[in-house]
Length: 301
Image 1 (cartoon, rainbow, N blue to C red):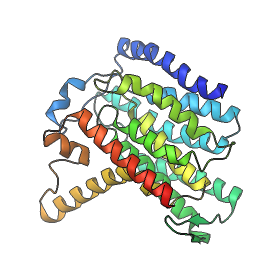
Image 2 (image 1 turned 135 degrees about the horizontal axis):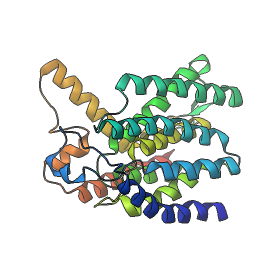
Image 3 (image 1 turned 180 degrees about the horizontal axis):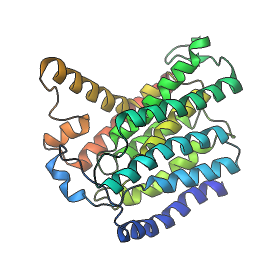
Image 4 (image 1 turned 120 degrees about the vertical axis):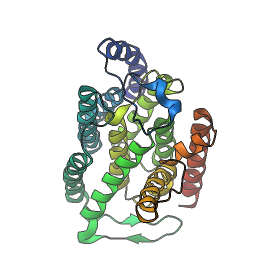
C-alpha cells in the first residue's frame, strides 16, 4: 500500500517542478499544421510529461519484482523519449521517422515477447465470452509482437486531446487489475501515477505526456495482456484505442484508393471536434464508452 501511495503523491509533487523546468528551457509541443485550428494555442505547452510516470512506475515495479512490465515501460518509453527529444530539437511535430520508430518497436517487442515465452511457455489465451482457450505454439512470438506494436501505437494515436489518452488508459487498466497477481504491480503503479498526471493534463493542459508516455503506456498494456493470457480481451478493454486506430486505417485507405475521406479528420476524436464537440465532451464520451465496453467484457468474460 505504501508503494501505491508513493506512486500517486510523488507524481503529484514532481509535476509542478517538471512543468517549470520544461517551460524555462523551452521544451514544448509543436502542433502539426494539418491538425484542427482550435489546437493552435497549445503550441509550446511543455511535453515529455510521461517521463515522470514511466520513471516512477518502472522504479517501483523493479523494487516489487515486476521486472517484465518495468522493462516494457523503459523500452517503449525510450522510443518515445527519442521521438520527443528529436521533435523538440528540430522544432517540428515529427521526431523519429515512422520507419525508425517501427523498427525500434518491433525489435523491443521481439525481446519482450521472447522473454515472456521463455518464462511462461505456450500459455493458453482465453477467448472472451466463452470458456475456450487456445494455444498459439510457434505463432506466439509473432502474435505478441503484433500486440505490443499495436497497443503502443494505439495509445499514441489517442493522445490528441487534453486528458484523453490518460483517461482511456485508466478505463482500460481497471478491469486488468482483477487479472493481476501480487507480483504484477506495474499497471497499478502506472495507473496511480497517471491519475496524478491528469491533474495537470485535463483541459487546459499544463503538460502533455508526449510519445514518452503514450508509447510506454501502450507497451505496458500489451505486456500485461501477454503475461495474463488475456490478449483477446485487450481489444475490448481498450475498445476506444482500437476505434481510434481503425479510424486512421480506414481514412488513409479510403483516401488512397478512392480519394475520399470517411471522417472529417482522423483519428476519430478530431472528427467529433470538427463536428462541434468540445474537447471535454469528447474525452468524457469516449471514456464512458470505453468503461462500459470494458465492464461488460469483464462481466461476460
